[in-house]
Image 1: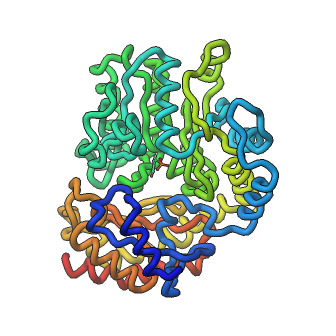
Image 2 (image 1 turned 120 degrees about the vertical axis):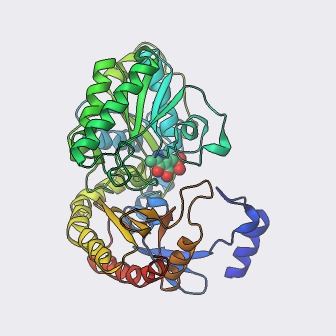
Length: 443
Ligand code: PLP
């Protein structure tokens, strides 16, 4: 097939996510390897997006392909009511790297279904109905997950589910609490959350759901003490703490689970993406012993035909083995500390349009501004979404030079695979350096 044929079928018959169908022109991709993918004209792109921040292990890892092929040759599918070796092994391996009291896994096909089911677990466990989630968040696009989502992707979907209340999480660069220090931000954000709980009625609140490190809404790293404070509020009022690690988990933050950085144990962790780098659709919820106990005698009233799909689970087992044997978690942490962090800080020194650099591991963002002191975003935060106006020009400048960036509102997220080499990351940063001169023109 040629690129033109791929494009023709796509334009005629594929209905795309999040897009006005007539206004898009998707790039036909022919193949991929490691940190790169190629279009049908043979143009190579360095994948600084890890697709949708999920190819943590890089494209086409040979051991992943081998594991999927082996499993396919033996048993492609068996429904969830049976026991299956790869399903059990994947669940055990996930439980082994999760905080101590989280020992059971409910498998889904992706992140939205994971959040959907985590909320269901919390509601059934507590007998309460409300869920608190942050404004600056994305939790997926099924009914309850998109309602829990705080960003503009929720607006055109409303009204959807009931019982979700939004609150503000910490964001030191644009503090909703007018804080001047990280300590103030932590303290005020926790006071705001506690007030929200008290005024919503603690006896009505099943769960507080938050992204451990906020992903598409800006790589917002929680300030010291915040997550421990959320844990304390949940304990005080008998609320389930759900950590959404769909994007932040499995190496992205240089840890198995991002929350390990802060030594806090939530009651439920939702995961997807990095668990098997999206080689096959897989997500799930890691469940605490206490919540699992609720369902010892009483049935859990939910399920999915493909829950714990053997092919997907075989790929998760292979992925976690590769992570361990190739030291990918440590590599991701070192990339952040030694290459991406310092590299982006240097870009900030050279480019006035870079207002802030933040992140950890291979999970970083730069905010582009037209005025540093006023922190005026290069493009406004609005429902038009991902890459409006000048951001399109910056993204185009990256693509022309063979770098595939992840842009959202006024930000460029620097999220290469966890397996990217230091040289590949440096190559990407030097392309970004040239592309940022486009942003500087608007300053
Ligand atoms: N939660 C977070 C934090 C995400 O970033 C995403 C997707 O980007 C989701 C949930 C939804 O996952 P999925 O697209 O697999 O349903």
